[in-house]
Every structure is written in C-alpha cells, then in structure tokens.
Image (cartoon, rainbow, N blue to C red):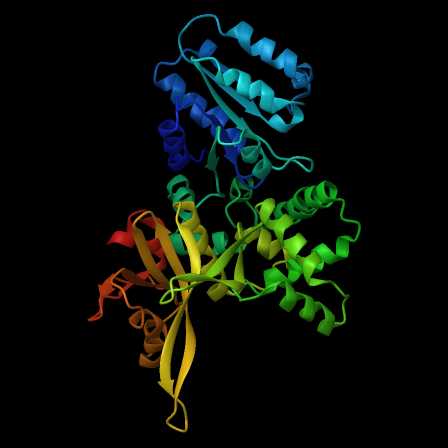
Length: 418
C-alpha cells in the first residue's frame, strides 16, 4: 500500500527550480525519505526527466559511506552532471556529511542542478538544517499522515473505525500499515523510547532521563491545557516526584518542540490584537505517540479531537493560536466585571482568518451557548466555525456561525470555506 502524499508532492513541484536548497523537515519516521526518493522521483520520471538526471544519495546507507566526505560527494555529483539539462540531486540524512552546507552551496552555483535534502538524528535534527543555509534554504515541512490521506489509501475501512484507529494510534506511516493493534502499540512505544527520546537525550546530553520522561507524561495527560514552565515546575514540586526548575523545564520544552514531538500554540488577545506571553498550549504532532507515552491508558476523545483539529490546521499551513476574548458581565452584586473567555483556535494564513471551536457535542441549549459565546463576542466579521464529532449537515445560525461535523472538516480540504 502506498500513501500518495499529493499535498507534499505538489509543494515540491511548486518549489522546483527556485535556486534554493529544498529542505524536507518533519518528525522522524513521517516519510521524508519516501517522499523524495520514491514519490517525487517517480513524479519526475513520469514527467519526462531521464533517470540518469536524478541523482539520489542515501548517506545512511553503508554503501555510500565514502560520499560522507564532502569533497568526494561534490566530485561524485559533478561527474554525473554531463550536459546542460536539469539535474535533480536528492541527499538523505545530509547531516552525516561534514561541511554539507559548503557542498550544497557549491551546487547552487550550478544553474542546471536542483537540490533536495533531508536530515535528522541525535546530533543534527532536521529543524537545524534549514537554519544552516541562511536564507538559501527552502523548507518543505511534512507531517504524519492525515485522516484524508489514510482514508484515500484505505477506502474499504469504515470512517468511524478509521477515526478510532487514528485517534488511538496516530498517523505515522508504519503504524498505519501494521495490521494488529498490538503491533501498532508496540511499534509506537519502541519508537518513542528508542528513537525520539534517545535522540533528544543524546543530542542535549541529558543525564536524568526521568525528568524528561515525567515532563512528557504531564504534557500528554493535559493536551490542550494552558500551562507554562513555572506552572509545570510547581506541579512537579506539589506531586512530590522531583524538583525541576522552570528554566530547566523551558529547555526541555524547547527540545521536544525542536524534535517535532510537540508543538506550542501561543495565546492571542483578539480584541487587543496582541500576543499574551504566557500561558500557552502544547499539542502532540502525532496522537499515537501521545497515547504511547501514557501506555494507551488515557484515550479522552474530547482532547484528542481538539489535538487532531490543531494538527489538520497546521498541515494545511495555517498559523494557529489560542484566542482570548475579553467580555464584561454582571456579578452577583450587579457590578460590571471583566472576564476572559477562550476561543480554541485563531487561524491565520495571509489575509485569511478563521475562529474555530472544537466541541465534541452540543447536546443542549446551554452547551450551544457556551461554545458560541466567545465567537459572538469577537468584534470582527471573519468566519467563525464550531466543529462537532457527529457527522452532521453543515448549518449556519443567525450570527453567521457555522457548525460542521468532524468528518467533513477533516476530509474536505476546502472545509473552512464552505
């Protein structure tokens, strides 16, 4: 079974021949190498590029050990460029080559070479690669499989069943391909411990494994909750587990974000049009990894649905913040008081903006009022959307607020504009 990853193929196509090094980034095992070496390579061949004009180098292959030498690699590539037609150079795990920046910058001097690289390991994560080119690198970020990508490749599986699997085991390609749930769970637990966490510990020379593990447990148990390093430090202290300073926690959070295990969403004051420095929210890049960290003991669909909506918005290249709206209300003594209420997501892309609430269900009038209240109090005319779990027909109320089902939101790439 092959996941076509058309969204990313189209990104690569649109970035071809732009005189920059295309750097494919993303969490490990998300399919970066397959995207380049199989899918994009096949696209080039299908569109008339001769195979001898596609130069692929997998530096993690022992057979290519000699090409980890920068001068040998550059010489190898130059010797394969025999005419003035366009050549496509793809290098996997580029960080295994010393002075790779010099090599790639040298390739940029060749007008008929288009370069693509990936890179990630304990010594050099792919988030670093893009910074090395100082304006000459063009990032293509790849995420785990979306529900839409999985369902397109597995049309025979009922959507509700697929959602249960996705919510529990996430979208890493190998996880999806495993047949049994035990295989999926074992793979995720092993991958988290022996790849992701080991990479972070080795890269940053973390001596106390337990600190990082406990912090990740806390984040996994409170997905989508407002927090900050000081609050997490206080939680460590009050739980009696260990003393961990806010500064150390901030470092660990940065490490986890850098490795693409988690992503931070900052708070935005919608009326004041400014960011609020703290607290903020963290979401997991892959739901399966989140659940694996908790040994699949806390599968709360409400929070996982919110995380899935966040990941879908990120995959669609939106900037996603947590919204805050200030309202004035009467207290018990009939005094006017200010309150801050939350909008789950403030979603921006260029001139577009959407406000989105994740509401697992709207069983009664009180719940409807609770979810619409922050949206009604936003003083602008950008689109406002509530996503519910049930597969419902899209509806729009008198305030212009759209309510749609999760299936429609995830499966229709144009869902925000319906």
